[in-house]
Length: 304
Image (cartoon, one colour):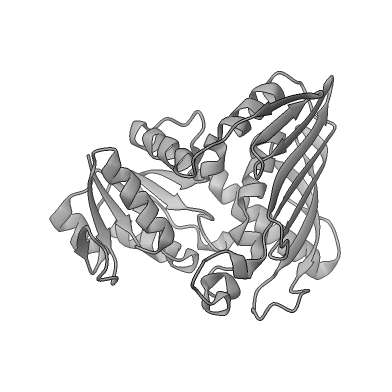
């Protein structure tokens, strides 16, 4: 299996390392001379000379759409995994031709998220759902200036609404598509960034009439949790502490950080969509982001 990784930042390096550990032949498209794998300057050149079976797009979000277009123009028709969020804005969605395209929402592969989904799948509906994630942005990337990161810039695809879109994906995956969205959000703190640092959304979803999502760049004690109520079910998932409590029964599980990425890459290689996020689902997340921004700007509900 020959896999091409476009971009060799932190996430590109992780995908490359895991792919190599799984026995794949790895090449990268990057200007980073520290990249230890076969390296190309352009995606089109890499497709011709390396002839990959699979491609992972792991460069900046703002470059995803152009990269996918370049890959399609080069005639690639294999499997394509695009880092989240799949595109920065809803109107950027390009045609993927004959490619089998997916989006890298690896938290779906966390064993406790899988266990929670199994409980939800047994229910006809949910009554309420709450998703929360936050971490102080200066803590994110050790040894780097957060003010110079892509997270600090909307133009580069940053901002908490896009950075923490895992929560949106999980909300749609567990609660069904959103019918309408209301939101409050923006740059509310003293962080020296040009992007949103707080967003709270409320949505009515197909399987749940009341879904709230709260995400921020501010929590100095990192948090990532889900709380659900349904017929005969109250479940609380704490991903930071590795615990799932269902109707008072606690399950704890330590998960190595690479585990979800490894499981995702294995599913990608098999084209196994039982958990892997499809392109259509990834685009739904971007549409939700656009609706949330519109709702916050207009102080009204936005229909999807």
